[in-house]
Amino acid sequence: MRHARQSNQTTIADALRLFYLDCEARNLAPRTQEYYREKLEPFAKWLAETNVTHARQLTSTHIRRFLVAQQARELSPYTVHAFARCVKTLCLFLVREGALDV
Image 1 (cartoon, rainbow, N blue to C red):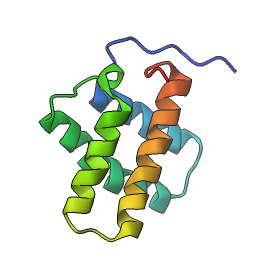
Image 2: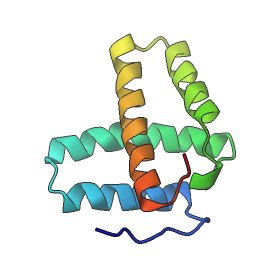
Image 3: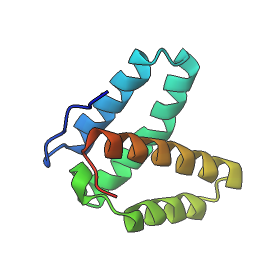
């Protein structure tokens, strides 16, 4: 199936809306959808604070810095890994949708 190519100007907020819509369309369990929101909303907030407003601006360095920031909050390794898994899932979705390059 061909995916609609997203604009080079897909904002982080739009990217999250598309991701959440995809989760709902795939009929993921409500708790799974809630889990993604719990992990991705802080990521989106952190990106905004670092002036990353569009999906194409996102780099692996941003992701690493976000994860290090979560470690600095003295979260458990499991929790930091949960953030990493959710961010990875979002990024893979954005690549498939054409909103992020590898």
